[in-house]
Amino acid sequence: MAAQSYSKLTSEAAAKGTLNTDASILRRIRAIAQRIEPQSKFFRPDAPDWKWEVNLINSSELNAFCMPGGKIIFYSGLIRQLHLTDEEIAVVMGHEISHALREHSREQVSQALAAQSAIGLGAALFGFGQGSVDMAGAIYQSLIATRFSRTDENEADRMGLELSARAGYDPRAGVTLWQKMLKVNSGGSSPDFLSTHPTEASRVQQIEKLLPTVLPLYKAARRD
Image (tube, rainbow, N blue to C red; front, side, top):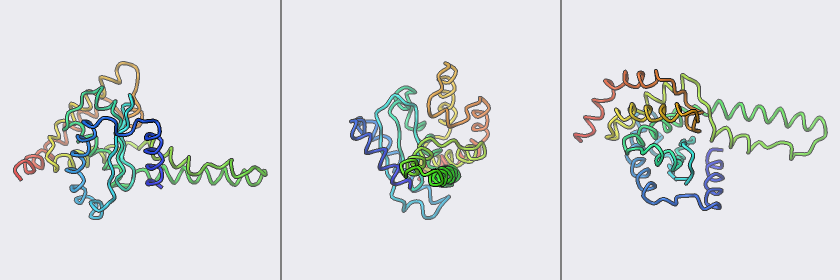
């Protein structure tokens, strides 16, 4: 389902002429992904063998996500408008990959399937056509606009920092990243990325508490 939704999203972007149009940013995110992907073995032994894909959509949206199976999308606005460093991009990517590793979107997809099945049953009972049921569309929306629980977010923060640290990216960038996010949010216009991620100021403090655990991993990776 994720592969089909990812194909749909990238195909639509290609048709609009917005897929992978910034070669410089595309090189950056793919290079970062190549360093982070092998570290996924510490959480899922099968993950390094996933059919990973990394693509960039040219859009003012401040957004990024990783679908199950390693399908990664970054929106150029997130990197351009926040002037993200490679280390900050790595923290975002590690966080989103963590959601995929832990299959946090499974619940949302299950709910979408259940809801559409109920709609389909009602449509059948009342004699409506199959066009009333858009199962694929519901799954697609649940995968690209997933809202995770606080527990899932906290787990993705911990795992994401570890993934980026093991890949040789300074996890302290997690603090500067969320400071930038909070600054944008304080302007009264919450970007898409923040609409699916809790952004209270305490999150920066939580990340700071994780640093003593992940900094040794970063230093070890730098020595390798």
